[in-house]
Image (cartoon, rainbow, N blue to C red):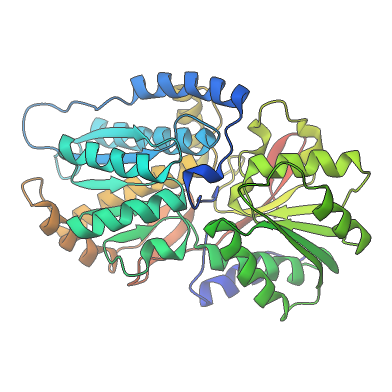
Length: 414
């Protein structure tokens, strides 16, 4: 397999991209799994208690809010964001804060529902939030961005990847790759590394994350050596039986099935493909991060699944090893890219505050204006990218990584 550097350079030239992922066009598009919901609600309650608004010492503080699903079928994403931001804030406070000012943190559960996400935003405003880390999923983030833009409140989303989040909202910045650029990057990776010659696609036409990636994947495929032999959609109302889509891919001789979708639906597709003796390679984007945690899913079926993501927990650099060790110790779980994105988001805020000279007494709007000015000047070395920078539209510039599931773990492809 060719080095991934070529793809990364192409992505950077195109001002590209980066998990999980990221987003969801509205809350109804994540089907609630009863068993999974029960387990994640318990985890969510524990995390909510852990991440109740942190109280700083007497004096002025920066108040950072965060929003995401800590319960329900998308809780793998939200809990990771909740904990990743929490860990970064605790580290910063223990080190003396930002220019000597401590941070108070408040995370609100939106259950991956647009209306509830807006309600969470209003709850955080009543609490006194000055900056928002969120939301976690794209659909919710689009809904909340409309509110934060009206308030001119600075918003940085760790994992909302739709371009609609930042379009016409100059107060919003992204940490993860945008959806279109994930599609371009995936097509380039498959083509440049000759992963397959015949490719099928299964995507969610009712979801902004999935359809956005799909459209750019198809466009870029015209510049690559592979052929799309089948492209089949499903919707939020029909996302449990994929036999028709899989059969068409199989009949077309697909060697690889591209899945620009979320891990819940992907787990069903892998299970149903196995039942019909269809064993192509499966390739996805950051939305597949979490597939190893799906309730009652045979993770052996995910062996060999490939995905583009900005973070690999098994990376050997000191920053990643330190983060993973601290995260496991604090939350009892290996962090995924969403945790890393949220961790980076807080440190990006810190860098922007330090660069801008912002102080807690600034109004929400004044603080936003200062941070917007700083975002065009800073570069940040984070867990999810080196020398990350931001375009004027709020999109991040950084290089993705390719991972493969090997022996039940995500392994970085060198």
